[in-house]
Length: 288
Figure (cartoon, rainbow, N blue to C red):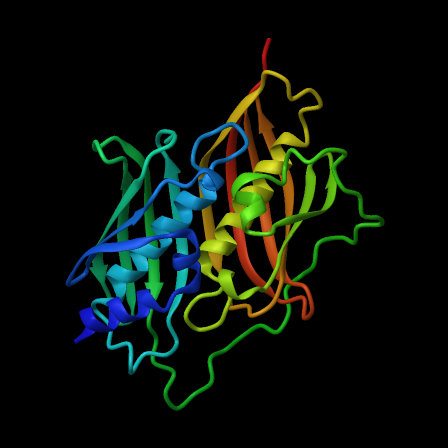
């Protein structure tokens, strides 16, 4: 029964449909999902955007987890953590994600997800933890507010549109603040970016965090001509769901030669609630 439930839930996922994902194989605790090539999924220099890869990884992992859950009896489903390692770039080709459950606890699933090209070349590898808790009889404990970052005295936007193109433009992400080492970017709470529950999709949040962390690295490079970069790792913790627009605030914590390390927090625009935290490592090579 849970396999049929998982197929039905995938078919109701607006974000997966928006990106054009297809569920091509499904079995108990296993799923294969594809992301067909679309030019607007590319980043500024041609390869598939890291956020698109992370979104595919997230969706495939969740579908595999759903096959072991009675979805009619488990309304409190949520992604807990996602860790992505980007192994190689992919340009103008479909991407295939295969997810398998590594371990199933009482209400927590640990999944391994591999993304590859049609000829078998590895694109990225991910680990996902997913939960299906039973809150019957009590209310989940929640810290009402997190500790805010210091206030920004003024907002500025970048002097060109290099950030807002391709996949970033497709998700309607905009830049709210741009200064060396600190970036704020906003994603709207529109229907196509939601999941089947009507809440901002985990993949959309992952995309926002990847893009914001990437921009924080580039903000420290005044001359971009000839420079090249890519995300090498991203770790995300999802703290609670959001059904409205979200702003990501990225702080560049450390630069170690060509590696940049930033922390990113994502909060709702209206209520100011923390919905996700991320760590992004980025490799940016400048011409000598």
